[in-house]
Length: 429
Image 1 (cartoon, one colour):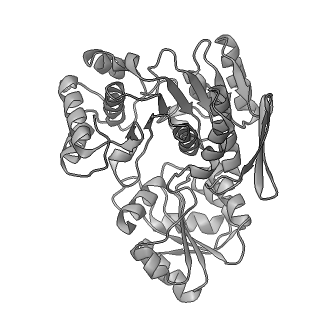
Image 2 (cartoon, one colour; image 1 turned 180 degrees about the horizontal axis):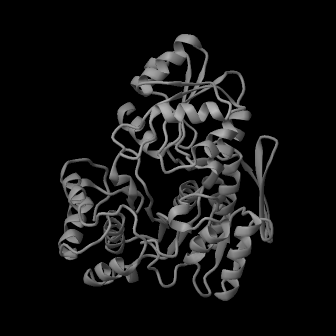
């Protein structure tokens, strides 16, 4: 298989057909995945060595940093992530390149035919397609990011990964994963395998207790933040320290102190694999991950912003709101104005409350094309209830123009949802 970038309508048509195979967007079980993988010849057994990544926040950023470190040492890396932002092709990276349109169309078509019209969710069948593509393309490593939870996630079909990673666990998707941090952590810890090393990021005590108990039951070597490795900012640098020594590194190119924790987990993985210190530096300096405090520098929205700065972030739960507030507090020189759209399945007040002390205003928008969008009216109401000066806007462009008209020197942050971020990236490319 080739891995050149591409776009087209062939894959879009098949993806639309796949959406109709199962009425529920989320229905956590592995039975349908095992059935289809068996029909496909069990490609999950033929993958290059797998690093499996679960967690509530930081999965994508950590994966991006691991990949940057591996590729800097000449390794060929498959990577699977979700959801996509602008195009589905972003989910499947074959040996370093986004899957091409012809390859994506062919692999989706093959999986659709092999499924034979049986019930299967969109995420399940597209995950099987990614696994099949990975199994047929030579590479040195496979990075698999969990979609939701871990224990019953469609990616949890690897008998013996090379390593597992659990990034910070927090409250999110309670309707599917449980209503306490311990229950959610138990679902995330479901990727831990017997005897397989597990790298664990910074955790709340309730989550860590569950993870440690799961590691112990599985006799899995534990490599945990605060016990076996540390990562922390020092002046304008970051320091990583583990049992083999200390690394003085640049700050991650991905903004925010929370990215230092994510970088620490990535470096712990790279050290586990025995890679040189150059890989750690590449992890923090070369990683790219869109819609994580991303500065937008071209396109119609940037033109509308004129002299204002325009930023984009896709975080959407209370922990992401706290991380975003911390990142904004470290940025000076301009007042911050939020343009926010969120889904009605999220803890909107929990996300917005930490931002109230950092933003001069919030302009609420509905997310175009999303059935589960929270209305701009409701988003503005909740924003007002947590102390933000809130307004409603027809769309993102209108919001940007309104902010610039009153504050040409503004910092404008579009935030609240990966779905909103994806729409912005598609329209602003």
